[in-house]
Length: 450
Image (spheres, helix red, strand yellow):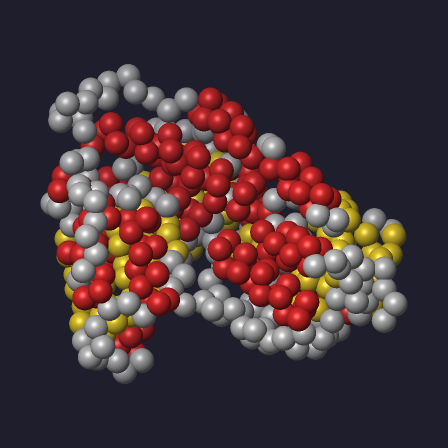
């Protein structure tokens, strides 16, 4: 068709900007739009600012672990406003820098609300633009909650921009967001409570290691309520009442702030996907494995907006953005490779996973060998005073291949990458053990984890 653009991207996060830059570099006329500042959740409202704030919490925790072992922690405090300024020193420049790069590569940039009006037309602030193809990469938003007063909660974006921390915070939900933010706030002296509807939080991770992390969280001053639901949140003269229910018994928790950490859903607000015949569901846009819409062949999707089997992680969004761009440019149907992608809960210490859980491998009918180690007494953890650390590696004894790796401990978010590489490339435990690592380092522990 005779369109204004070869490709129009909706969403200027990592998936969208990756695809826009790649297609523009091949001579395509590309447009991109976002309601929010360019950069996406990870760089501006998630992974990156969260881990900068976590650094302050790490220092506090490290000092406490070494108290009586040569470090005097008395008087050591977390200066939240200064830490927040440090965070802004990174995040504030990202939108402008990202938009400048797009423009330099020839991409036309827009700001505002996008809405489909046909298969090939999108309306932005009352002005229509036509494109031969669209890529939807609009990310995710906090999922709607169903109790009275849910509008009183703040989300992770608002938490990561707090000018000051309150004395008492309740986190609703037992996932990544609640645990990561609670571990930061608790090290700043905040009374933190996590309300988890299920019997065990962080259900995507190894349950034995989750149990250890929950105990470590409680040692840090975080109370975790299991099998508990929130029935209402109400204003009080001093903050909020959070009404909770467990085993048909009700009670209240007082809080100064209540944070939504109960999961996210694809963000299609205002897009009017039906106007462009774009089928979608709770998991995202209904796409083939190669990321093309099943109902509208002119549309592709990537990242949290796409209903793919990939984890909802920034590196996966980048991969999908690259694959979608390549498929559109070349007219091919490459499927992204999701093997060996690790995920981490950046608590203190961090919880990691790559590959299969023990129960998943068992359900798959595989013969497995489970290699579990309590690593709290290993040199790398003794050195820093950490008393909670463990690893579990799932191995196929017939092939010596690693099916899954699960690590809880300081610095293990780096080690999990090696396990991811091993799964992706089909390396055996014998091959990994044959590597001579620099010593003493956390990475040198890897050969003893099998």
